[in-house]
Image (cartoon, rainbow, N blue to C red):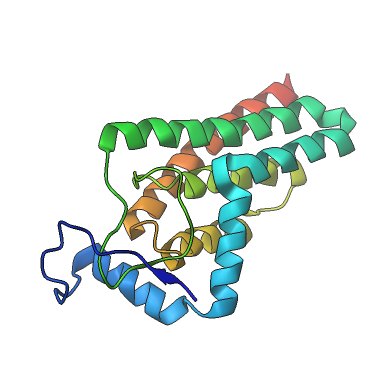
Length: 185
């Protein structure tokens, strides 16, 4: 199952009950962190790391759909750009990842900053952009599993994933409108 992260030094009483977002995170983990769900969440985490999986899908789309190669590559770059935007916000906000004796962490993270979730950001941007290229709304199928996976793995607070989805939706939406208007001209 998940490994227990050592208690944060800021948590002085190991028996302190989590409250607020931390309580929501612990509740989500208790309800959802079954072995198969944790495996799936880890897979999503690895796929979404640094937006690499979304970028690879865009490159594959460009190779398969030569008539819209530029659009696919622009969408792939948009997912990476959304990821970069989330990193910039993280460096300004500097919110640490959740730490509490009741929070279990199921995956290594390259940084200890939490807000917003870069996985949520790049996934939402990719879902919005690739939806436009495929003519199908991918957001409901792609975004919720990634957001939930970040909670299951104990690496983000609920507002981290919601803010990441909002940022990714904004970046993806702006770029998608530009791609659509470019097609019309």
